[in-house]
Length: 448
Image (cartoon, rainbow, N blue to C red; front, side, top):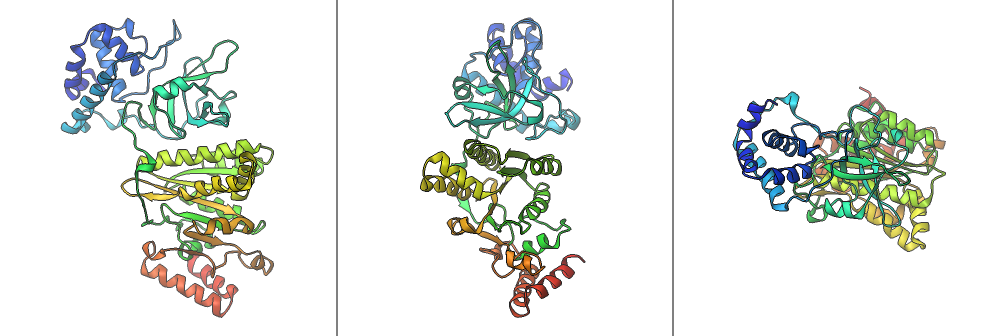
């Protein structure tokens, strides 16, 4: 963006900053992540503050010369006033005329390219995570390129009001003999850290009113499940299935459809490592948290908690989040061990599942969890979408989906008349002529 365009678009911000002393500007510049503010002239420094505060460019990379940029101690009212003036400028003037689309910067949960993030004050992207001992770290956006996960000090977390699940962009510094440390976040959930944030618990829960579509799936079993037990935005859904009935394949197919409609977080607990790699390749834009069969119980519980908190941050910002958990059985067993007793462990898992909802006035959080029949009854009452698989049908050589026992509460809010009639027809044929006849009809309909 040209200098004259910045002055024209953000003139009032420039005037406000120009009234400050150069020393105040340097402190304020550090607060917004401007590199080496002491070396800049006043006019140039003001422009760089506006660019950083308005997110007109990527956060500045720290110079390799001299000491690292340190966070300043700018008065909170000054930071707030700058943000307020920028928002006023944006709302009162047609900025689309001044800021070309090619120059706008979008910060996504998962970046499209995959640069290697070394340390030494280079930009780093990740998710705030609380550990079992109460300490904090920033789990990397791209785990493959990071050997040591940086810690987040309690002082830094409190200073920037960071919560578990926040997506942050900042710096990582290393000191000899010490672990890498994440510091000075420039962006929190795609916004400047000084922007106001919402709280998941502030929103009332509402009935799901819109369903996820599986129309692009080539698997007629998934298409049939869409009308028999539709998955709404904000649903608490259980895939009740014994092992060997194809639940992972069903989840894989559903995940690919969901990833095109929402921000997907996949939690794989106790699974084979190759399954994690497969899901990562199928869902390049999803957050995949994997604690394989050789992981500790503590690691499994921490990943499940991180997934839930990340999904809350997405939903409270007005977007749609979907957690796919495979499996609830592994989560329950791990939570029971970590919590030292079965009752507390089960309560931990129930709270996880019960968090799914449509937020009245904001986004949605959907949970689709696979669960063994032995654990299902503990969650069925809280679930409002139940997809049941039967090993009996597998032995008979027909698909495992049980059309008679799979259902969604208040499905009338999600299905149109044609879909409702089709669901009734399939269930009627399954009850009167058998499941094989119903599947023959479903395969004909959904493969047309």
